Length: 174
Image (tube, rainbow, N blue to C red; front, side, top):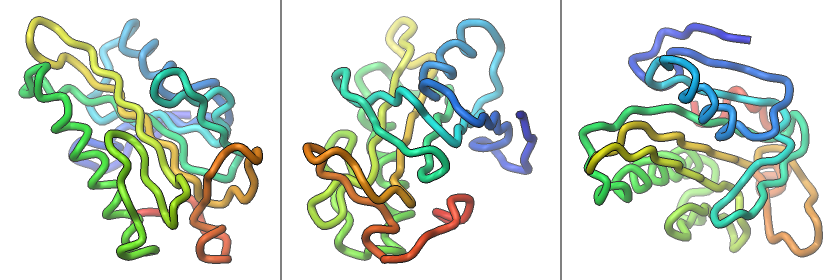
């Protein structure tokens, strides 16, 4: 499902799916086959094979979390400035969570966000480099909202686990 939104860049186009293997993989396919509007968001209610850094996986229950990717064209950044984009995205996520947790939100650079020593969000940025500049970026974000259980070996948490109340996913970050 595609929805057009009144936004300057991010979210102007929203592609919403019931389930996808990976929003980043879908975004990469879009970039390979089409002219994609900058700021396009690919969102799924159930990401079945989410990915993290260095081949790790992102486990997400259906209809419980925010799992999405954003396509940007930060051509003004040279390839050796990639970390500036990472900083901006991570700090924006922190700002969204500070309203819930204040000073308890911590960053584990370059891509993890923790609350009370447990991972609540992950960021995976894939850059397409052309020459010495970034041609396109796919910014994948997974935020645990209402999920309450994970395998024992995963030290994760969610907004619901931390606040003891369920949250409307479409209102997170407002």
